[in-house]
Image (tube, rainbow, N blue to C red):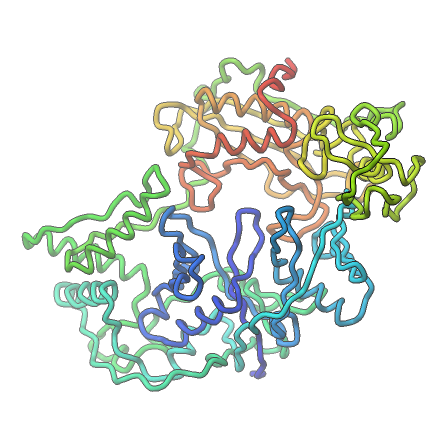
Amino acid sequence: MLLASAVVVWEWLNEHGRWRPYSPAVSHHIEAVIRAGGPRAGGGSVVLGQVDSRLSPYIIDLQSMHQFRQDTGTLRPVRRSYYDPASAPGKGVVWEWENDNGSWTPYDMEVGITIQHAYEKQHPWIDLTSIGFCYVIDFGTMSQINRQTQRKRHIRHRLDLIYPVVTGTLPKSQSWPVGSAVASSPPGPPCSCPQCLLVMSVKVAAGANGGMGLLPPMPARKNVAPLGGPKLALPPGAGPKPLDGTGTLRVPGKAATSQVNRRQAASAPALAGSASPASPPGATGKNGRVALATLNRTNLQRLAIAQSRVLIASGVPTVPVKNLNGSSPVNPALAGITGILMSAAGLPVCLTRPPKLVLHPPPVSKSEIKSIPGVSNTSRKTTKKQAKKGKTPEEVLKKYLQKVRHPPDEDCTICMERLAAPSGYKGPQPTVKPDLVGKLSKCGHIYHLHCLVAMYNNGNKDGSLQCPTCKTIYGVKTGTQPPGKMEYHLIPHSLPGHPDCKTIRIIYNIPPGIQGPEHPNPGKSFTARGFPRHCYLPDSEKGRKVLKLLLVAWDRRLIFAVGTSSTTGESDTVIWNEVHHKTEFGSNLTGHGYPDANYLDNVLAELAAQGIAEDSAGLEKD
């Protein structure tokens, strides 16, 4: 095997499908917990509040590779990614962009690495389109430019801690070195915390009642590895480049698929198997005894359930910790905290099985499918709409603008030049003079007319305008959704959290096709992955209201767009367009299901941001 060094960055998946990096300090803390070995390394948790007080509600479960928020019960996937030590995280360089409120947000790790690579090569600018972002980074002005709106934002780079570095070889079956960490030093003594004592007592009792052997005494732990971390391995033939958490080689501007399976890289390995190098002495003895480190989480749950049954049969009172699938996101958190407190007090705890993903309802016959009262028809089609002709951009803007003869001493937030100076837009020149300034009639924000015309020409050119500062919409906004079909009807099943009503099922179907002039690459084919897509609403008064507004959004081609998938990175494909849908019927493991008490209000706000409010429902066509 080839020895190599890699920078380790721990990342979490946000609601938009983007992997966001933890800070270097947090990544160092997680690595330190893994190096410590023992029961916590294999199936334990990492308390993030120990290193960053702002993250005090969060715990990372290393076995399932999820971040758990204790006060809401929210679960998010995490991963351990590997990057080149010569890249930005290996040098402690962080690239950030400025928010509207003046705070700074770090770029995704791959974006920051790409920017740093171009910066070190002394390129004057870099186009991020190739990695799925519609921005240009101008190093001369240290600004980020939106290719569609031409809006500029300030950017900066700063120095932080260097992310942890690991060296060695990474076995193909692992995404993080639990096995190698345990194997590199003798097994340590069992943890004395209440949770681990509970697990130990469960295993001992289960062994006594179920014919399983007890764990032999463990020797004391020697000194753990230094901060450089345990030794890792690359798969044979992969070369010295480090691997990321998705099984791709990290090279600025390039990606090569490795031999590591995505599923293996996305979750931590279970410490199971009699031939595991992490198994302590005696684990594979002739008497079939099972050692602590050879039991994975599933076996722990089975043992705990068996232990609970034994206790109940013997007359010992047992308090069950249930409601892990309750109607409120707080229930899982309360159940988990209750379990910890009960185990600390020496009370037995009944463990429940983990919830299963339920994407679709039970089968429904045609006779059970009904139309929705108050909503006409059961399907809707869209075709490509031609842009309105006969009006120039200048004529469109005149309806929404008031001329400003004496501009205030402020910046135009599109070109970032002073309003009293000519526009700084450098693209194709509109016919209006670059020094003219106008104020939008509703919101009152002021811009160069030159910049507004350029922004309109880079958009859908449908006769509408959206303020780039406050997002106020002027006119009727339409989108670039490809042709397709939307079906909607009632099914006789209830959603979690809505037991008193039936369910509205929406089925979107968009076929692949050829991009039109309004799309990113006219004349080029586009893909349509995952169709038909099934979505669900409760058949309540508010649910029907949301459906009617979704019909308006569909007619205005605002539900989908053609672009780059934030989940897969595929370009020229059909993607969601900023209006969230619930695609999970009977669970909420992905965050796209029920129960979700705030979903209907949130989607109404998202539709309003697209210019679709209650009065828009009257525009529904028959």
